[in-house]
Length: 154
Image (spheres, rainbow, N blue to C red):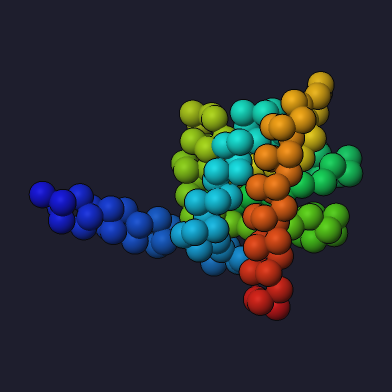
């Protein structure tokens, strides 16, 4: 019984990897992907998240800082090719995750999402001190791992 679901899972994982765009670098591994999506979920709960290409680009151009998480299975790829360049110019760490569906689920939306920007401060209002500290510690951990991953590529 258990082997059927395991083979089904591995087939789904292989399909996700086949749909990845060739520019999806640095791609998060399983562990980093899990941590990143957890961070996105926490940021969505505390309203520190910008969803979609338009919102992310607008926020980066306005000077907001954070971690940019981009889905690797976007088609057509031209939709997101400019986002990593903007991130590099603004000195914002970015990482690719394999699935836009998983990114949307973590970001608390029903529609698949191309990219999100995780910020440490909410756009409006204030966060509780304890919640903000949790978000900042998670953010710091994931951002440092992403920077290490990016530096090992280049």
